[in-house]
Image 1 (cartoon, rainbow, N blue to C red):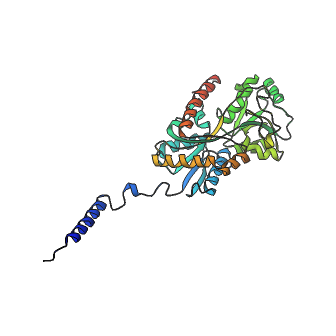
Image 2: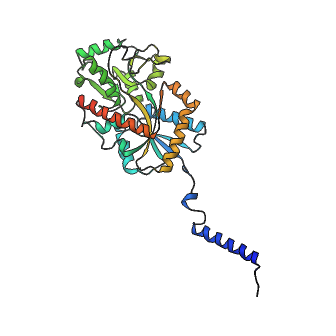
Length: 339
């Protein structure tokens, strides 16, 4: 009979034990050895029209993430207009609760749509996972270049005398961001805001087309969406809702504070994930977004678009959302627009 030496027997026993251990663990296909997230393209949704403020912001974010190699996976940007973002959020909160491969960018509109009375959404930020606040934008009030109005007070004086005289265009639904951003200073000035004529368009680009096409007299928008039109002298910006004057093409535009008109409204831009996002995906994006916020390429992108950096990670972002949610609830109640 063939006999194993003691040394050979020990070697065979060791190999057998190792084989049994690997087999017990699934032969190297355990969850511990699965490919790290992300394993495929990630879609970022702009819940507004193509070319609008959300779409523009996401294209800047994804461009820098890829160009700097902070993220090497393919990043797609998709515009989904409808209901000022409420149509997309209803679909997202219902069908994509665990979809780590679909994120979206929005603004205070996610709070407003859930709190306002008319056309309100049953879904809000609590049906998502807040990931990162990137920057703040500033509300502006603009008119066509050929308008007779050269300053905000003369415009508001006419509106005070007859609130129905002029049509105000905005890229969001009634009671939403662009509407509120105009109503606040108008109310502070003494205009009967319940009689104002506000025309809602599904996106900043569409509202600008309406202004330039003569379908509106006034535009309520944000600095990043009007800067190129101001530079081309197609419009006049009568005021900006910022703590201080903005640089570049806005350097001659007064702030509401300079004009003695109250109306502060913080217009942040932030990225959210699904309500039941995996811990792995949350950690991945928290790390990548922080690296993005610290990169010189992103800082250059902020400057180019006239955005003010205001980075907040998940915990701080969630806290600020809770605070602003209470503020907007109070504001809508004062305006008679709360549900």
